[in-house]
Picture 1 (cartoon, rainbow, N blue to C red):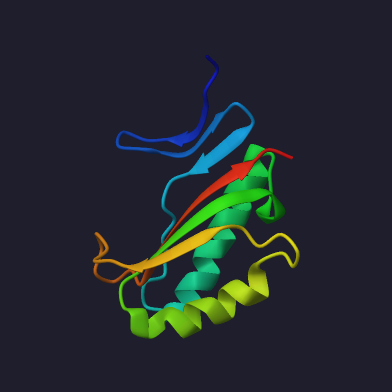
Picture 2: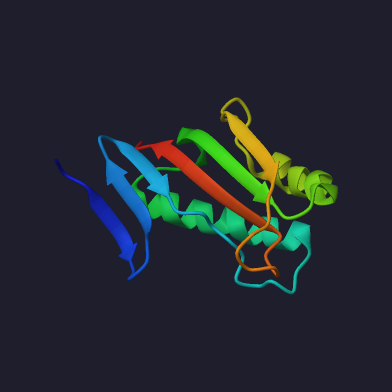
Length: 116
């Protein structure tokens, strides 16, 4: 069994690749002073960067799970998502309200994608 891990830390790896599938850890914003629009843009930038590093891209996303701290931010998050997602390649997605580990984080996104 061959598993490749990228950005391996003591607690987690940011990426795992196995059987032509890329698994990303939950991505959060570093700039938590931003609102939902800014944090979502930053998080999707992290997703783009990590997928590219793994040999994939957003058109290859198989499943996306989005956690937002307050459903009142659903519209703002969707505004950024709709600008970002590849037309014709919108993946299955779930969005739930959740208490995130860092209260300053408004959104966390988990992605599974195929390799290109």
